[in-house]
Image 1 (cartoon, rainbow, N blue to C red):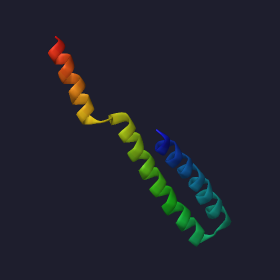
Image 2 (cartoon, rainbow, N blue to C red):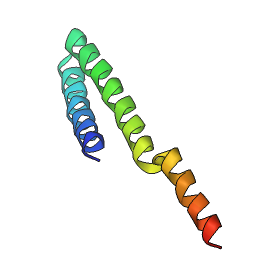
Image 3 (cartoon, rainbow, N blue to C red):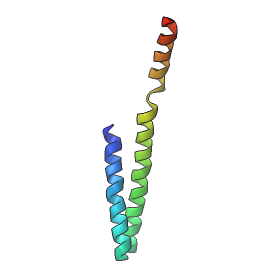
Image 4 (cartoon, one colour):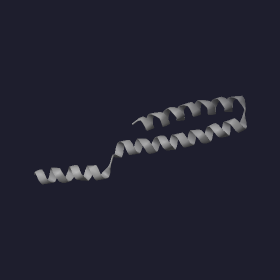
Length: 70
């Protein structure tokens, strides 16, 4: 899933920015990068969950057709 890959890359980039601004002592920049990292990580987890769980309606239809075949 493309969205998961892009959110993960965005989280990595903002984490690097968070570490850099923390090292340099820029408190306002650090805060913005940290909030951005949280948003990217939450979206990455959400899209990963959607990718793994799949569509419930499609899964039920496949199970029903398998049961009818037997």
